[in-house]
Image (cartoon, rainbow, N blue to C red; front, side, top):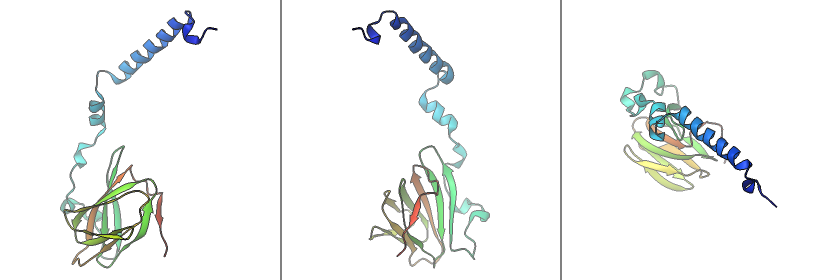
Length: 165
């Protein structure tokens, strides 16, 4: 019994399809490398974060307890600015699909991840793996807490589960 690949009449057709596929891939991509393609798709204007340069309209107002603002997004991660008033707290929650890293920008907070407490100061970071519950509570901070949150994959806001106690 012959298989498809043993059939000598089918081989030229298979080679033709493979050749056309290679030619189409080359024509649609050109001579660019994968790196060049990614660089073309990256917005290089939003690569460094300085809270002092954040527009006033995006900063936490006096009558607000919390603010969560998208700052940057790529195909693999998103960056958000979390702002919490000194007397506010982020209720216990977890994310099904997203790993998250909080980077302290200003203020001070306690980040509790599954009951283990971490101090978040400017220049420090706390990693929260997916499916791990966490809270963020400003702590001994004279001003608002500002933290840069990095989510991977990009955060869509639809799968945060707040735990009620």
